[in-house]
Structure formats: C-alpha cells, structure tokens
Length: 480
Image (cartoon, rainbow, N blue to C red; front, side, top):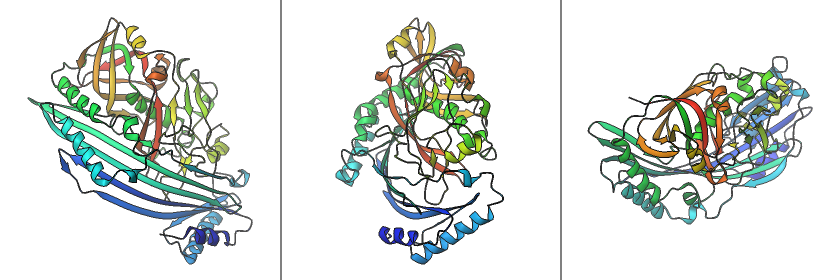
C-alpha cells in the first residue's frame, strides 16, 4: 500500500516551473468466483496500485509510470516524464501549448445499495451453485457456468496547479451461460454474453436478471434451438433486442466516431474509420429516429464518471441527433488537433497506460414504439437476441453479426424459433433503414468489460443503454 498524504505532498513539492504536471494514482482490488457444471473453480483475488505522472512543457508532453510510491520514486518518475516532454517539444503533432490544461476538483462514487462485502463469500458461492442447478433441470445440457467478477477501483487525479479529483468505482460483472447438445447439434444460450455489467453492489444481480428465472429460461431456450430449423436466407425486416443493439452501437457507431481513429492514430492496430472529418455536422448517419448520446452521467451505468482522465467534466452530449452526426468521440487534445467538437472521453484502463479517446456510456435514446407494435408492423421478418459472433472491417463499415436466438415474424406475429441467425450490412445504410425505435419500457442498461484499443492494448469498461429497434430490408442468413 501507499500513503496518499505523502504521495500528494511529494508530488506538489516537485520543481514544476513553466510546466504543467499531473499524477494519476490507481488502486484496485478484484475478486473472481466461478462455478462450472456444479464445480467451484479456485476463487481468485488481487490487488494492484501504481501511478502515472504526465508533464506538459511547451508543445511537448511526456509520461512515465511506476509502482514506487517513495519520495525518490516520485522524483525519478517525474524526471523521466519531463525528459520525454522536453524531447517531444519539436516533434509532437499536438501543439500542447495551445491547449488549456484543466484543474478539476470533485468526487464521484458508484451508487451502492448493498456492498459487495455485505454478502458472504460462502453465500455468493451457494448462489452460483443454485444457478448451475437450475440450468441443469432441462435435458441435453452439457455445460453450465455462472460467475461473478468484482472490481473496486479508486482513481486520484492531481495537478500541479491545485486540481484534485477522486473516483471510487465498484464494478460487478455477472456471467451466466450454458451449452446444449443432441445428435451432433450444439447450441449456446447466455445472459447477453458479457453485456450485463454495471456499477453498484449486490443489487446489480436483480437489475440485470442474474437470477433463477433467467437460468431456467436459458436452458429451455437452448433445447428449443436444438430442434429448431435453420435461419432462412433473404432480405427482411429485423427486430433486435437491447442486448444485440449493444454490439451494433458499439461497433458501427462507437468505434468509427473516435476522433483519434478518424485522424489515423489507430490504423496500425485497430483500424481506421469510414467517417471523415467533413462529415461531422452534416452527415446523415441514420434515419430521423436515430438519436445517440454520450452520457457518462447515467447512474449505475458501466462507463459513468465525473471527470475523464485529463480532467474534462463529463456531460451528456448528442453524438447523433435525428439521424445527423453532430460530433466525434474525441477528448480536448483530439478536439484541438482536428478542430472538431468532441466529448470528455480521455480514458486510461489503468495506471500504466496513457489516456486515449474511448467510449464511455454511448446510448441510443428510446423512441415511442412498444415491442408489440414493432412486431405487429412486420409482415415478414425476424427477431434476434444475444450476440454470438461479430465481424466488422477495419473501417467499421461492413459488418456481419450472429446471434444465439432467432424467431420468425410472420404477418405481425412472432412464430417459430430458428437457430443460427445471422445478419450483415453496411453501417451507413443499416442505420438509415432504422424503421422503429422501442420506448423506454424496452430500454435496458448494459456494460461491456472488454473493449480493446491502443498500443499497448487497453481493455476498458464501456456502458451502453438501448431500446429494442426495427430495421427494414436487412440481409439475413443462417449458419449452416
């Protein structure tokens, strides 16, 4: 551990003259509990602490990270960051001297009704075993898993000019999945893959449906899929549930709107974007029903915070409003480089990574249609839920996604279940075919704990909230 008071004191005693310096301290604790087919895996836990010092000097910037919390360690880390800042003064693509450096002050804590510690370890294990048993009450189940991943992370951000913020995060990532097999056929059902994570305490179980009812339902549905015909092929209307909408928003709106990607920074590793700077403000990204917001203020959502990792105040902003692209996902530095409007989304996954442009909570705003109204409007179509596979090109334009569950819609009614449902499209055309948007009753808040980007790689937590939605004329096909 480290003495926070001494760390702050030693940082503020550094000889910062004519420069701007920050220290970002991250301390985290994690626990993982998993029961697979009634067998408890070894319970694991871990602790991690470290810090990164960033120095801005003229047009140069430099950073260095360490786990040495001694006074000498902080001096050495600062010296290395300053060395890199001096070296980069005449080499940087960013004119840092033109960017206002911020000195935020404030504190944020995840909303918690019942703390993680309030439920004993033995009770958590028993709960996971109970879910395993419920998933095994149907025939043909060959594999079952219920797990819990908990992360508590405290992040301090302190500037050389008096800024100081603290974020106290509690994240819970439940996972519920099973596999059924019969006569060579194999089908998987899960509780929205890894998309049911939230901030909060034990109350998250109820909020995301991590319960007996859904464990039973998954087993029943897996057996239905084993006997179901293959998904048909052809163009038809497509209704997506909120769990699949999470992936659709994430891949075909979130990543292509990252300004550093638009500027080419990610081309070598994660790809570029079909979006170009001249599109922002005018491009018709989708139909008039498409409204997408960047909103790190939603209570309990996975990517909620008060300030980003460069001290920018988190506020709700429309990314796409009535189908028109309004801004990019770019922090103050990317906004300066591109002269494009952005958001407070400079984020780092840990103390040993620098912040870059990332999604936080990227949400599709609800519309006015009920789920039944969407289904009733479809003469020939299909309803899909729960992502199973995804593929998208390196400009985030052409995509192909598969789901665990499909159900035909015929003459306005949900009819027979089909297995191996897939659909493909091109981002700009797909979103312009948005035909109906579900109301608030269909809205669900989800979380993605493994969004990867940057070199070295950073897997970060992202929130998505979405209603169900109906798209016209989508190319659908089966997996056999």
